Structure formats: C-alpha cells, structure tokens
Image 1 (cartoon, rainbow, N blue to C red):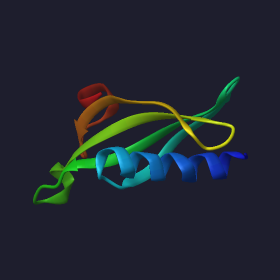
Image 2: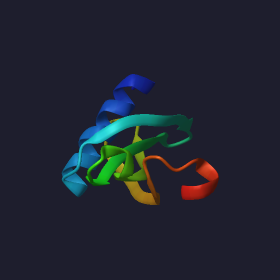
Image 3: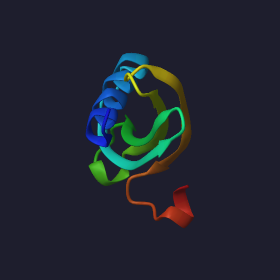
Length: 86
C-alpha cells in the first residue's frame, strides 16, 4: 500500500468511526506496521466559518488498509494559530 492509498483508507475509517468527513490530510508517516495519517475535520460548524471548531485525528492503518488505531490529538478554532489553539 502506498501513501495515497493509506490516506484514502484513513479518510474512510475516520468517516465510519466519527460520522465526520476529513477536510484535509495534514500528515502522513510510514512506520513498521503500516501508516500513520493525520487528518483534520470540522467538529462544529459556526457562522462565520472562520470560527468553526476543527480537530486533528491520528489514524493508524496497517499495510492492508485495516484500522490499527485512531485518536483525536486536539481541537481548535479554525482561525487560531498553532500556539493559540493546539
């Protein structure tokens, strides 16, 4: 499985687990057991959208695209810088 396939599998897994669609793939790392994919998703939509609450999830996928683990790393406002919101 290549990185693009791993990212796609992680996006599908996150949607199945949380019911939320990934807005972006923000990190991808191959490890001994497969891949770790960092995904950003909207947890709470607000008006204006610059105040949406986002979350970063780490999804671990094995070489066959099966889930090894999933965890939310943090939540933050869309407009927040990394120092402010993460």
